[in-house]
Image (cartoon, rainbow, N blue to C red):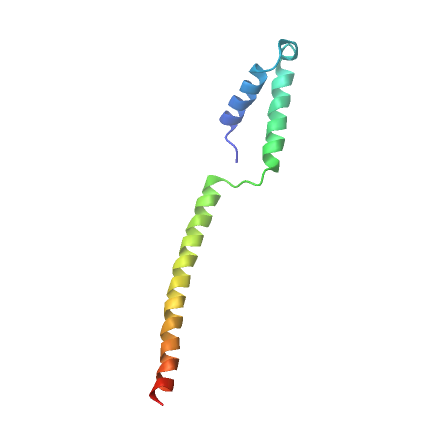
Length: 87
């Protein structure tokens, strides 16, 4: 779900902002930062862009169907009202 290149870039920025003493631990720090980032981002309630686009399409189609059904319902209600008005 997350772009690995972007995750790598964020991890590098965090590692670069660490004090020199921490940086001396080398790749362990980089690896741990990536692990923490992945774990925390995984906890977020997020969806992929593809999934978002699919759900947007489903919602638009549902709205179209609802509008069609409302129009039919209005037509049926008018048919029901017509005989009452003639009496």
